[in-house]
Structures are given as structure tokens and as C-alpha cells.
Image 1 (cartoon, rainbow, N blue to C red):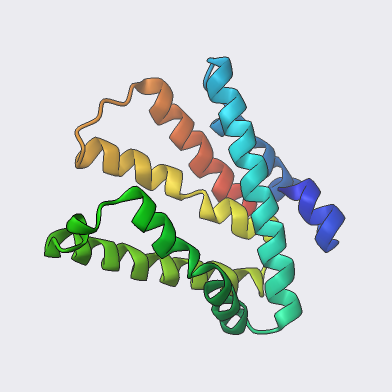
Image 2 (image 1 turned 90 degrees about the vertical axis):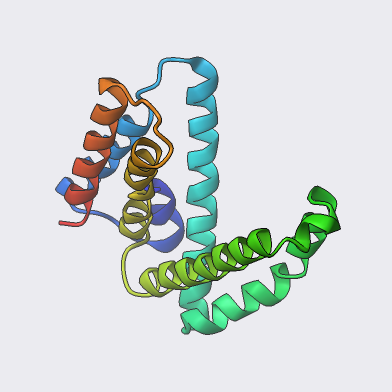
Length: 170
């Protein structure tokens, strides 16, 4: 993320936050299977791309809410089409599914708005790194609610990522 923010947004980080970015990358690449590393790298490139695009867009718009509104107006019609393709209409009538879907959608809009607000005010690399705290929450949700077993290696990776986030935000 830092190289993209440097080249496209003219931003740079001090030594400790930059070391945090490197540590964050290390923490996310602790897997040894080549397909997992390739997928992690592609995911990272995708995240860096849309983070820089959104960051530059929200700054050019001078208003995170106007930018978010434009994105939802442009992209919003696509999602019902995807839902029609992926889910049978009969499932839409289930109030439980509908309620959870509407809640997830509302939380997604709120989260995106918060990220855009932060990108308008802080360096993109820092915002992107703080966003990655979701990895820690995913581990906790998996362990507590889904009863997934996470060995010492995964927990150590989560600790490395949390440490990196603290370094980046200093």
C-alpha cells in the first residue's frame, strides 16, 4: 500500500509506521502454501488498488459523503442483479434472510462511509492498515462463535498484525 500511496498520492510514512507496514505484510504472508501466498498477494494488490482509487476520489470530491453517494448510485444497481443471479427469489421472502441481508447491507454502507471519511483526513497507508484490524476480529469471531481451532501459528500471525497496526498508527 505504501508504494502506491507514495507514487499516486504523494504520501510517505516515517520509519516506524513504514516498518509497521512491512511487519503487516509479513504477518499476512505467514502461510507456507504457495496458492495461499499467491491469493494473499493478489488480494493485497486489489485492496491497494481500490484504496488508492477511493482515497484519490474522495479527496478530489472534497466530500466523503458525496463521493460515497456517487459510488452507490453507480454501483448500486449491479448488486440486485448479482443477487438475482446467485439466489433464488423464493429465498428473498424468508424474513430472517431478508433481515440479515438488510442489516449486513446497512453495516457495509456505514463501514464504507467511515473509511472514506478517514481517507479524506489521514494518509492512505495508515487507513488501509487500520482497516486490516478486521483480520483480528475475524480470528476472534472464528474462535468464539464458530468454534474454529486456531493453532499457535495463526494466533501469532494475528499478534504480529496487531503489533504492526499499532506501529503504523504512531
